[in-house]
Image (cartoon, rainbow, N blue to C red):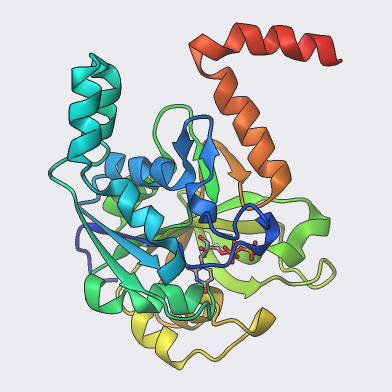
Length: 291
Ligand code: UTP
């Protein structure tokens, strides 16, 4: 991978969100709020913290609300000012810093994550870029997950994929990597396979929705055929990439919530709510009445 800074991040948000129906029939999954912020905003904030300069959204025609969320809303801003709601005004105004630009592309049909990433090809070019899946919400103690990965990329010049150890019985829900550690303890990805059954999974290291990939991935996505679930899988293109490129497995610091599932979404809601000073005490009192 030829070193160049990671300036662009791709947000594939054109999936159907079937696990969250009927909520996601007309509301994009990525617009579901955890406390008071939609999932996509958490992912965008993580990307901005990592120094990303251009946010590329891969949307479909029914998910334009995601783009609207990041558009300037002058009426709302002046209304909040008139009402003296200065904190809210600042939050709405600064939803994306002025130094960061946005772009979008339409994925006409939900053909899979790999296809969604490929749709961003002309907006990304051939430079290394990040991919963030907003339904994997990652809460890190100090440094956000993508910034951890960008820092590692700066140090090594090698791209990476976010991973975490998952229960053995759940390998068939994840991309799974096997790794080989170098002398410095860095885990280089040796192989990657999409949703293997537990008895054939090469490890318990599950891929989570954070990637730093070289521009070469686009050429490989072009020749990948539909794989598991009849979808064009990003995993299959990454497997082909590994024949010529190195990639690191990044075991991030933090907690990941699978907000594409009800279980993960509810856990995230509870944990994030408890992190809000104005909600914490009354919620704890309420929980005590339940147990
Ligand atoms: P998921 O595997 O969670 O699929 O996609 P999904 O369609 O969103 O949800 P379920 O499984 O039906 O409930 C992971 C990410 O990839 C995007 C999704 O929007 C999500 O952010 N994606 C997936 C696309 O953008 N296009 C696709 O064709 C598939």
